[in-house]
Amino acid sequence: MSNVPPEAERLLESEPLMAHLGTCLEGRPHVAPVWFRYDDGVVEVVTTGRKLANVRDNPRVALSVQADDGGDPRWTVTMLGSARVVDDEERTAAARRRINEKYGVRSDAYEENTLVRIEVGSTTYRTY
Image (cartoon, rainbow, N blue to C red; front, side, top):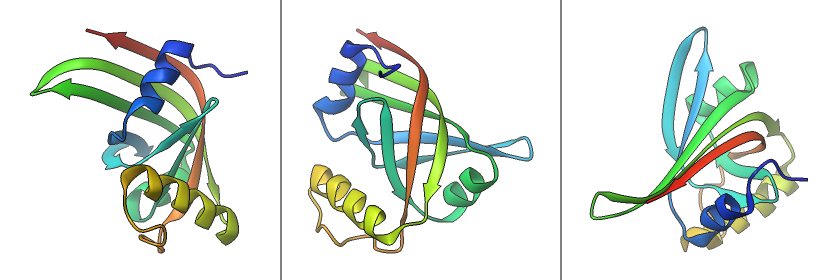
């Protein structure tokens, strides 16, 4: 059962928006934009670099997604969760295809990225 309220799920699935993934290592936060896919309490991202290294060392993460019209917010969803790096090329390739399709790019783009699955523990959301 998902820890994400149905209205927040609808918002997360509604349009291809950028999420901001917050990770932390040695007390230093790192926030970066990522493409994502939400499905039944799990967020998938495919990433590399500092974000991936941070998740490997500390699985506690935060995500924030916002939709706006010309700078005026329509809605926001913030999630806290536990991330797990999936070092499996077949599962990563499948997730990459799903995410790339959502954002309208070639299914094989960003082949260097690795799958991170985030189990959402808590969610807050607001519509304006």
